[in-house]
Image (cartoon, rainbow, N blue to C red):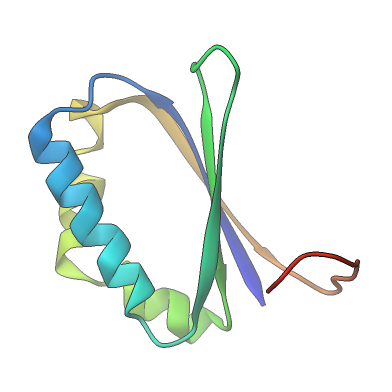
Length: 100
């Protein structure tokens, strides 16, 4: 499994952002190999982390090339003050009480 963490410092989210973001999320969710996401926001709202789970790098690459995702990447400065993406391979995962 692979985790992609999208760290961002939000700016203003307008209606165009909300529509594009919904389309990008739908594209991720419909990509074969997508395993889900989790979102955290700092208490002051200054930073957001979104972690996506993927079965493989092929699944991730399929999503990365989606037209709406590419448009959102090109336009990041309209909606974020800063962003950072980290891709990590999960070598082990264990615990109890959480549904996959």
